[in-house]
Length: 150
Image 1: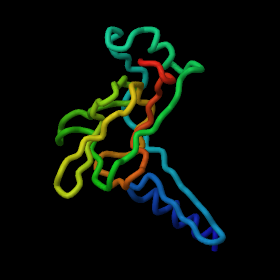
Image 2: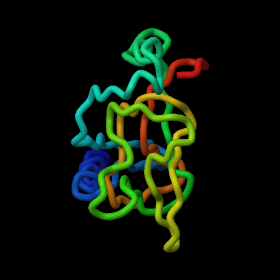
Image 3: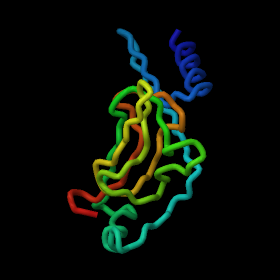
Image 4: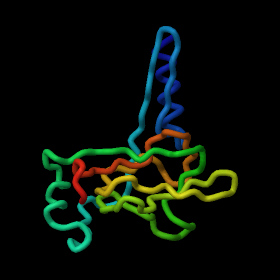
């Protein structure tokens, strides 16, 4: 029974826009995550006047680098751009500031901004454009520098 269950859950994730699925029973606990790759180029560097060279060097993966996830605050449809045909608000490798808008969630015909809580560099985008998300689902991963200001 377990192999069939795992196989059917893997097919469900593979054949849909779902990036994460969890199953739990009294005997089994299973969590499947699908990595959603973004077409963006890594290594995009912002103007140094915005963040400073020293902070950028730390964000290159030094021992002081820290990663945080940006989660969906509510149910809704995830959009990376402000309107169809527009470029995404952020790409992998891009520096963002605290409070910067990263994406939009549409819920009940209203658009809600998803904002960065920390300054840092976008290292991963977990959700594809147009995907329905649930509260707490990871949308982005940011690389920050400890408690220092970037």
